[in-house]
Image (cartoon, rainbow, N blue to C red):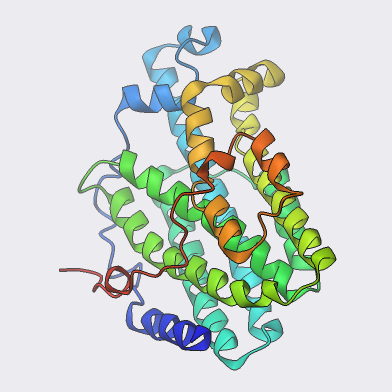
Amino acid sequence: MQEDRILQLYKLGKELNWNADTDLDWDKPIGLADRDVRIFISGFSEYQPFLSMSTEEQDRFLAHMDAWTDSQFLHGEQGALLVASQLVSCAPTYNAKLYAASQTFDEARHVETFNRYLQKKAGIIYPIDGALKDIIDKILSDERWDLKFIGMQVVIEGLALAAFTTSKEYAQEGGFKKDMLELIIRDEARHVAFGIHYLSEYVKMLSDEEKEARAEFAYQACLVSRERLVPTDVFRNFGWDIEEARQVFLDGGALEHFRKLLFQRVIPNLRRIGLLTERIRPKFEALGILEYEDMPDDGDIDWAELSKPLYG
């Protein structure tokens, strides 16, 4: 049954390939969220260095904040491309190798699309955040195939899926960014489903010690991913006190809500595959994200939704 699902996900990937050149209208306006919404999300609506800026300078700051976030999406997709290519060789079954090959092409398309968006539409691109680089390097360098699945398919892809979905909700209807994210989200939903179905059966066969090691790995990946959402390069570019701005950013109510939402898929999925162990649960509770434990996971695939044609 598990192999049948994976094969079906592979077939869907073949059927629903899209082309950034022909399936996106690059002449459309970006269609970002309203200015007041973006200020609220930024967490600096009451921060004096931001308030002292002119309206034009505030808009430039918001554009850099948007570009920093999208740049991390790009770098995360680059990491996913490299990990997916590794899974082609190290995944232990034929169907998993086929799916990993199709995902590698998906990730290449995402990298191409985000890179083109940042260069041609946003006009700003930021380097990879140090914390994000650390976790991608750790996933890439670990020789155990199942830790690559856990780190990338469940944690990184799960966070990406939640972040893309939230960003799409803020984007304006009919704008380029919403169109772009809708296509990418379709792919990401398949990727996360693949990881859950492949890992669910495998984790059951592990010893308690092996299971705890993987639960700890997942927790560390979540911890780093949570902490990386701080655009210190933007603060530096605008001459702000980095530590002060970082604390204001982390304390912002809108950001805190957004950061928790990023885990509304990851936590239920870790529960589904058996990695939300009794030993690791208090650590997630301390992060304030265990509240998502009982939310629906991505293991129950909505085939009708995933099978919808790209348009129409």
